[in-house]
Image 1: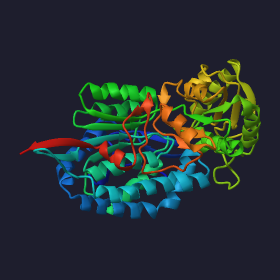
Image 2: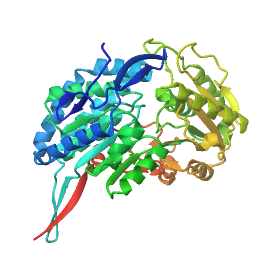
Image 3: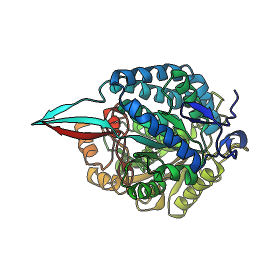
Image 4: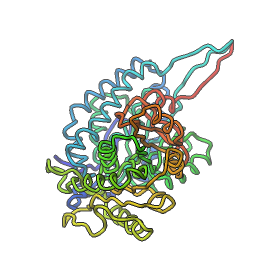
Amino acid sequence: MDLARTDLYLDGRWVTPSDASPLPVHNPATEEVIATVPAGTAADVDRAVAAARAAFDGWAATTPTQRAAHLDRLHAALSARADEIARTVALELGAPLKVASRVQAGLPLTVLYSYVELAAHSAAEETVGNSTVVREPVGVVGAITPWNYPLHQVVAKLAPALAAGCTVVLKPAELTPLVSYLLFDAIHEAGLPPGVVNLVTGTGPVVGEAIAAHPDVDMVSFTGSTATGRRISHLVADRIARVALELGGKSANVILDDADLVTAVKVGVGNAFLNSGQTCAAWTRMLVHRSRYDEAVELAGKAAAGYRLGDPFDPATRLGPLVSAEQRERVLGHVTRGLADGGRLVAGGPDAPVPDRGWYVAPTVLADVDPESALAQEEVFGPVLAIIPVDDDEHAVTVANNSRYGLAGAVWSTDEERALRVARRMRTGAVDVNGAPFNPLAPFGGYKQSGIGRELGRHGLAEFLQTKAIQR
């Protein structure tokens, strides 16, 4: 599999970037450079935005049925690359191949297909008194995506934007850009009109800021850190444009005293460690009733011990490396501080054995974590679980809401009505009750500093539409 890419995708063609400087892409399991991609510039962004602007009127004028047909062809072209997508993500992100196949490749295909159906309903009208209310595409969208789910996060923006009739300029994360090239190979094969979707690789400070500040970009959709989201918000606000943000999380997994403890802990640990903990919606705080706390801590430690670190292509591997050396050091710093703040090490930790090569962190569990401590408040983004005792349902809700984030969460109880009462009081964008499955049609997004707006399903489609009232 040839991973080297030298071009950008602008106006329906692979073109030479304005600057030939390469960006290295590493394999986090070996620390080796496996490919390079172009380091795009502001001039490349100008070219991409000009192409998207020129294509907008024609794409917006297509019928919902025509847009659905384009998305259907794209889905077929991308599905044919599913195995290559999974292997590419395993290489550039370090996700175990089983996870890369099921989640990193499988989920975006599911999401993309959902918009084949939803695209046909993107231009619905309604009558309000003497007004006809229509929904129209917002315009040129700048999509800036993260490294942890490098295809899913792109598709979660691209599919609804296209379904709405928008055109797109994409900047994928510089750490994991290779899978986006597979997507654009599929886009080219599917025959989307020139300029409708454009790819500019590069860094956030150069390409990302150029997109966010560009006067001809009508909307910026960003997923990433809260700090970067704040910066993008300022750039977009300066020109009164639209912004959608999916940012950080510090989600609480609330286990009430009557819960199926074995299942709740097992699923909770698995959620916290998914994608090596590099998941914004991960349940990284486990809140357990004091009457069952010691048992839960013991179960969590045993569960963590079952997560084998290793080569992402080894079927026995359950936990891959972190994406970069910088990310590994950041996560280990959080663990060290958590121990210094009084956390009790149950599993893993900075001194736990890991493979000699690769940016690995051992699956780590800390108990007796102070709800006010940095480990309970800051997004770690690694395989680190903090366990916190709570006294009752009221206390659990208070601790769960004691965060500047509000992205996801969970509640466990054999009394579903009791669990629902707790779930309704949690200030967060999504709550799973008793391990309910992920729903790709449900809105995904956060409260507070976890972001603005929603992705997925019809709510995600609505982000890329604006409303016009025509009186008669």
